[in-house]
Amino acid sequence: MLERVGISLEDSLLTQFDRLIKRRGYANRSEAIRDLIREQMVQQEWAEHGKDNTERVAVVMLVYDHDSSSLAQKLTHIQHEHHGTVVSALHVHLDPHNCLEVLILRGDASEILSMGENLVSAKGVKFGKVVPATTGRNLR
Image (cartoon, rainbow, N blue to C red):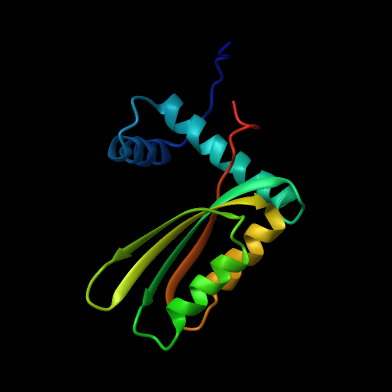
């Protein structure tokens, strides 16, 4: 069942929002607002339970120079230490020196965060980010 709600926005904010949803390809404002609400619910889920043993999923992105002294080995070692957490890994050669690695992690929230932080903070990683996601069970 859908319930209709109303909100009040300043003209300038609504204009900016309409431009944003058009750029992102939303069919209407309702779809965009639903996605914004879901995003906040996922962030709240992680904020409330981010360090407990509840099953979670996350994506880790890493950009690094594969020529960095033993960095690739260290990143692989961290992944093997948490082999049950790594669902999938994608490795892309961006240019002759730089690589992008994307990992999908699933397991205890505390292990996911610990592993993600260890990967991102490894010396030689040029850019790294842990993106908390959701299994979708608590979203409708």
